[in-house]
Image (tube, rainbow, N blue to C red; front, side, top):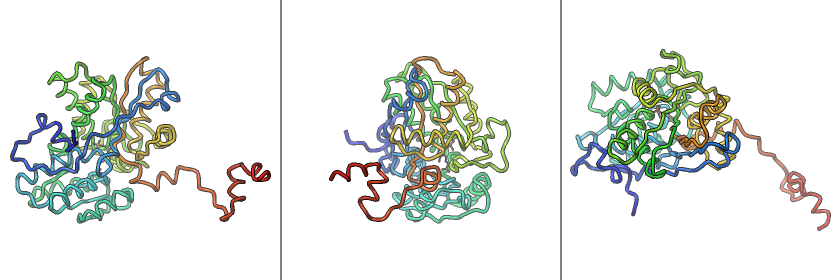
Length: 358
Ligand code: F0G
């Protein structure tokens, strides 16, 4: 069966009708990897799976929600969409607007989004506005603008975004044949953890799964309002995607945590980078720093003895590492430079001994 995107696949779970035009880039159907190398290092008694959302068409989970948000916007005759973003929402909004033939306007915090994400918005033809402020300030501006002008807001306050994003829970459930014991996610604006929890509950209610996971959410320590219990005025973290001080779906995140009996905690930038490197070097998956917060959190809880033997833990890797090559280069070994000479290269490789016998 050809894959035609999440609306086509899970139509019954979405507020669409036959007259809803479907704007899709064939998002979804992303791989779920069993992280055998990672568990050897973390805890061989666990089963860890990685849901790689970087395999979506614009390289992040945002596409799942954007297909629905933009399709519904087109259904109501919209000619423009607008969002604030730490980068991925703007990349996705720009691409789906291009596909739909409408204009995207995106507000981003100046100097605080990764280069790849900025490039995406620009090449897809969005009007990119860099705000001298943070994500939270940009979000409050676009909310007001969308109330004043004929532009559809496509941040996750738009209910169709969360609706579409819940499709990831369906896929995990379909893949495993049941829900895992735990599902771990990075938390920024908190839309995604809200969406996943809703997705699991709906699948449960529909009789597709017989259990529900405990939801685990992880914020960066310098941007951890939910953990602290109050907004953070100046959020800071290397994981710019989740550099958010006042999440729009705060309540949804608390509900996911409390109804499921899960946890929302903070991980430091050091823990995030350690996990980011481990995922890449042990599993061959290049995710972005924010994505690694899901694994960093699981490593942390595991150290505290939180899990029991045989637990299945799914970690969502929300975005593709190629979006942020600067961070990858910054935290990796510097490449060695040599003359264009085979003996020089052999020396570096440690094979110079063989060349003596040639
Ligand atoms: N991971 C990545 C790669 C993200 O881009 C985001 C959010 C999150 C995790 C957190 O998800 O907000 O649903 O809790 N990015 C938004 C954006 C804020 O503008 O692209 P959340």
